[in-house]
Amino acid sequence: MPTSAASSPSPSRRSAKSTPSKPPASRAARPRGAEPMSKVDTAWLRLDTEANRMVIHGVLLLKPAIALEDLRRRVAERLLRFPRFRQRVVETGDSAWWVEDAEVDIARHVVPETLPRRRGRSLEEALQDRLAELAAEPLDPARPLWQLHLIEHYDGSSALIARVHHCIADGIALIAVLLSITDGGAVPPQAAKAARATPATGADEAEPEWLADAMVKPINAWTVREIQERAGSDGSGAAAASPAERLGRQVLEDAAALTEAPDDAKTRLKGKAGRAKRVAWGAPLALDAVKAVGKSMNVSVNDVLLSCLAGAIGLYLRGHGDDTQGQEIRALVPVNLRPLETAWQLGNRFGMVPLPMPVGITNPVKRLYAVHAQTQALKNSLRPALSLGLMATSGTVEKAAQRAMLKTLSRKATALMTNVPGPAQTLRLCGSAVERVMFWAPQAGDMSLGISILTYAGQVQFGLIADAGLCPDPEAIVAHFEPEFQQLLTLALMLPWETKA
Image (tube, rainbow, N blue to C red; front, side, top):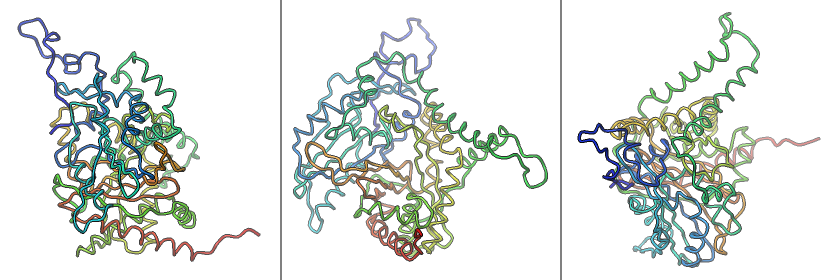
């Protein structure tokens, strides 16, 4: 079932000639009052499949419990100020449009839930089961593509499940939206102004600016670094290439790395994805402890967390009898390409890069530095910006061609991973504290794992959405994550401490 409503061209807009030639769909079939969807967002809209819905899912745990009517009132006041949450999607031919929904019914978008309990399943496991069911369901294409499910009675608290289609926004933008509906939160002035104003130009006209932000600025930064380097030789005595030549070589090498990478390693986690999902998450880690490990090992917080993830997946594979010696699997990792102050503009402004994860390295220190080497290589490349350009390009081709591109992409990775920095302080919503926050981006194609790492209020939350056929027990991976971190923490505490004289 598609996630956007189809619409035929209005007879009033058809050519009066008896044998008209078919003009471009973006011009001939534009619905009245519609805004063109950007090419990148169109690409995410089309990636939706029966096996993997392109819907971002989130869970917020609120204490004490909040009332449904209070939440509906808050959402109507704050969230509907963002135009995307008042608009439905209409597809005509190979184009997609944002169309104002004149009758947004808040009761259809903020709905009550009662968790069904099965014998032997805890309340938390019941919440995970419900999230897995929702992850397999499409959003209603006749309405704006988002929905909130409120479980009012959750062990003295409330649980809020958020569902937002990826064509509306990426994870960074959704965090900005979340901040706007919390107590004391406010819609940024620019967003409020945009919500009241009628745009003079559509997304098609704005697209070059977005692509410039994504591609030109990173390339310029790289060029500046090259110019600042001292002139030298390439080691053979020949004069060093000019900055422009080096930039051209870098672009070609990074483009080849994105498009010509071999298929990912064959493991039990790699195969044909199905509709059914499984969800698991564990107890959060203290962010200060993760930072301490990173500082003592001279690596980043991300390096520490990614190493723990690689270790957990490796243990899972070996626990099921797989030989992982010398093996890597790839995770597609989003890289933000927008200033955080413009996150309110929604849309998708990130690059997607494949990150090799050394699941076959059992030594935690060796694995940590192997991950560090991989992340440093990505930081010094243009692959995030180039991948955003490829996504924009895929939004302009026919659906069949994009499906082929998706199939090729999904063969090159096993997981899609998001690592989102959330607010440092505890938020409140309708008077209640937001105790935990978790978000998952959807997997694409036949990827089996959706991995979420999110920092919030001094804690790091780790969770998985997995294909039920390829990974029926994601809780086993989650169970290995904290012990892997404890190994690194113990080693860090054994290192000599620096003291000031």
